[in-house]
Length: 150
Image (cartoon, rainbow, N blue to C red):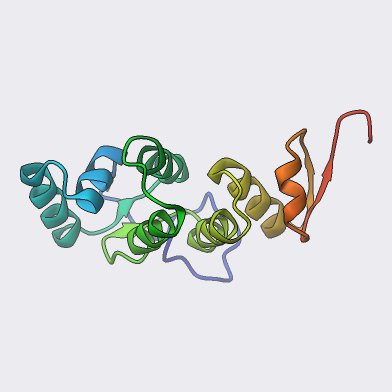
């Protein structure tokens, strides 16, 4: 998990103990400074704890909240997510996958869910995605197929 041995390809085997899962609302407070009292507490906690598990779903929700509620621009959201992944206190199941999803989200302008799906297809070597979403065609590393085209 997060800081595991690169030779260990089985994601279900944890080598780093996790102290707690971190929720989207703590990350949003930290990133936005809103409201200030909670932001100070969130930032202090993230700076003092160790081995907080950042679930992929929480990353997706963080992107969604920053986009929809805070109307943050895509480059700022990408920088924010990268900063979360770089926190010493945070561990992820597959940080390289999340970094690649952020890269696709930012450069190919896909929704984060589709960007994550593309990054997952790439990382597994499957490189095919069944979808009606034509935005996936922007990414040349995967092949989008539609039901009926199989």
